[in-house]
Length: 114
Length: 114
Image (cartoon, rainbow over the protein chains, first blue to last red):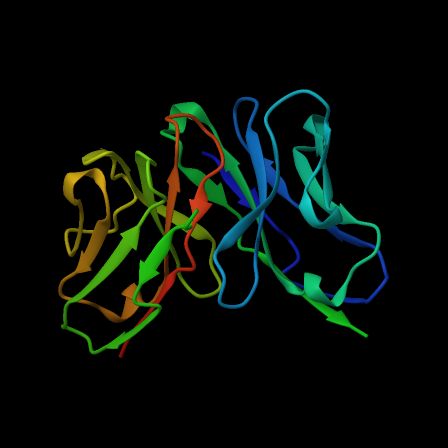
């Protein structure tokens, strides 16, 4: 069965520090992978997605993620965090044969301290 | 272009009452999805409409939940009668093509059942 694991429930980083949010998935074929962010009172906003090709994908707001098939991972990174990055981040897996439904992780809540 | 909108943003009801959530997808999006996040858990798929037809309702928890999509436009999700375990955030998403692609999410409706 498909599943997504985000092992870090909550992370606190200092503004300007680097960030890495972990995501591991379980899926029988090549997955389609997504990272979404939810700021308070907002909907889920797509940060980036991976379908195929280059395993390092660039997203909005300076985020990037790397697909590693051997590790079944799709970790999200940002070299320098800004206070406005404080939000909840969700990793998701999708695939055509599952009817287009997405499978989400439990989310990682990010706090940024000055 | 207006995004996905959901109404109400919050709803507090008592056990046994009925609640109806509404989702207006992005204009022209044939695909409409409902998801739910119970506190501390992952966001879980409920069902998928293609236009007015239910494509996949495998995630609907039980027959107390009824989803409709009138004329292939907006959708409603009715919970009758509501139980305590129905509390959570209900997200709606829409997408333009019947492929795994970017699903545009609404801000969610926070439902609290007392």
